[in-house]
Amino acid sequence: MGDRMSERTVRDTSAISMRAELHAAGLRATAPRVAVLRSLHGAAGPVSHGDVAAVLASEGLDRATVYRNLMDLTEAGLLKRTDHGDHTWRFELKSRETSHVEEDPHPHFMCDACGDVTCLPDAAVHVVAARGTPRAIGKRAYEVQIKGRCDRCA
Image (cartoon, rainbow, N blue to C red):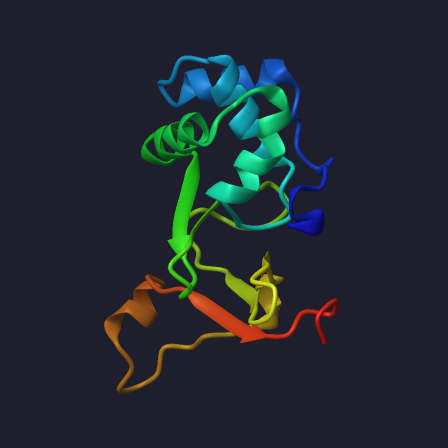
C-alpha cells in the first residue's frame, strides 16, 4: 500500500465538512462512514477495500464494516468503484476540486508488479472520437488504463 493513503491537503477533510458531505448525500454521518470517507480523502488515487481496511484497523473498524460503508458511499454517489482488470474493486472520490470532473473519464496507471493504481493528469492521455470508433468515445463513456512498472518497481 505504501503512500496510497497519504494525507492530502487540497480538500477540507475536517470532520465537520465530511459530516456535511455525508448529510448532503442523504447519509447519516456515523463514525465509521466519516472514517472511511476521511481515508478516501487522504488517498492519492483509487484504493482497494483491503487498503482502506488496513488503515482503519487501528481505529477498531473490521473489514466487513469498511466494505459496507464503501458500498454505502458508492451508492450515495460519493465514490466511484472500478475494476482495473485485476479483479480487485478500487474506490476513489467521484470529484476532486483539483483534479477530475465526475462525468469525465480520467486515465489511471496500474503497476503490473505491485498493483498500485494512480490517477494520471488528464493531459497524459488524449482520446479522440474518430470515424469507426464506438459511440462511447464521443460520449466520453469509457475508462483509460495504462499498465506498466511504477517508479518503485522499475
